[in-house]
Image 1 (cartoon, one colour):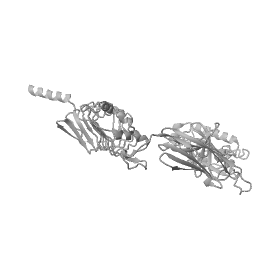
Image 2 (tube, one colour):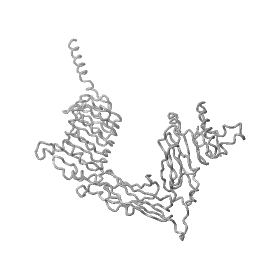
Image 3 (cartoon, rainbow, N blue to C red):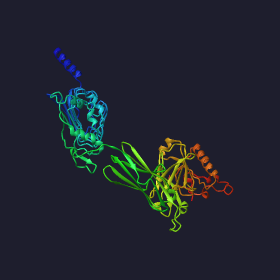
Length: 547
């Protein structure tokens, strides 16, 4: 009996010293071989790293198990782990501490996952890592110091990803490469290192120049698994191998214009042209009075790999089109701009008269708030003009008593969105033709509410709208409307009435599209005619349907 008790105590003691060593996660298998204990989980819908992994495991292989992330300290209890294979899962995220505690790890394979980026400092926790397999992921960037903590690496595979531009500094800053350069030619001192970089959509422009030159000079101990790296873009180099192309250094844009001052008759079409030389290709914008021009027809034509012309067409010049137009080009190195002055000559009395602007000055514009969110609104307008295809607009927007920002909108556009509105703020927005100041009937004044939490819940921003023209305007529940065709006291009564409803906590029912307001006639009746219905002068919610 004593011998049995001694044996039992020994078994229990062994179990306590090596907890979990005899367990195996459900759906997985555990085996022992000359490399130690192995955990194999294949095609099991576990979704996350098992919690009961044997602590004495030296090799873990979890594949096709629908893992989506590697959380912090995923394997910290398996300190003896040397081989970790997590291929063909759905991993999109690696925590920066996901490999913490794996001092003995020498091989990490993450092939066939959905990683778009890797926190490269994660590898400072695995100083002995020799094999890193990241092929068939979605990596689109390799940072300059990505390999800083991989000084023991002998195999790196980032093939079949989405890398398009990387710098040679990625490898120049690699401690292993620096050590190899110092020991170059001393056989046996530096192990061979295999790099797999093929099957990426390389963008062969000036940004890849350093990397292409580096690839051409690679030699032992660094070996490319596939030395035939191929360009995917631009079109002129697509399908060519690195050793077949010559790349130039990048160049800051330089914008010029053949004519910096042009004069044209009223009603003529104007074409402004600027020439930009840059490497890589720049982004070009035209600006008028420091505002980006939207809607005008601008075309770009590539003269060669480094030069492009941009032409801005201004149809049917009017007096409001006079001024300075600026062509601005920029790429990642810098920007450049050139200005062109447009003058309009007086019409010749013997020529056919050009339609004067006075007809458009009196054009009718119907403006309304078409949509609103918690923090913004979308304006829509309709204008009756002689030439709608050639008519552009100016939006004047800002706080009621402050200078207004001007946004220029080209022909064919009849909506504009304003976001990031401040609470408890009075705003004014107007739409005018061309460069004219807004006239009466072309503006809306509105006040934003103060209860943000309530607004977010109701998905309504504006509590009060004052209409500055006689028009049809959709008004949300709890919103009061007046027109400036009525007396200003009407607006004051609107505000007072709204405050009373707020204090009483009344729930004004209605929907955003259920209320319409127009002129003074329906809003503000003469107090002597309707002495018993003063509140009918300013109505809110679904109580008012005015025509």
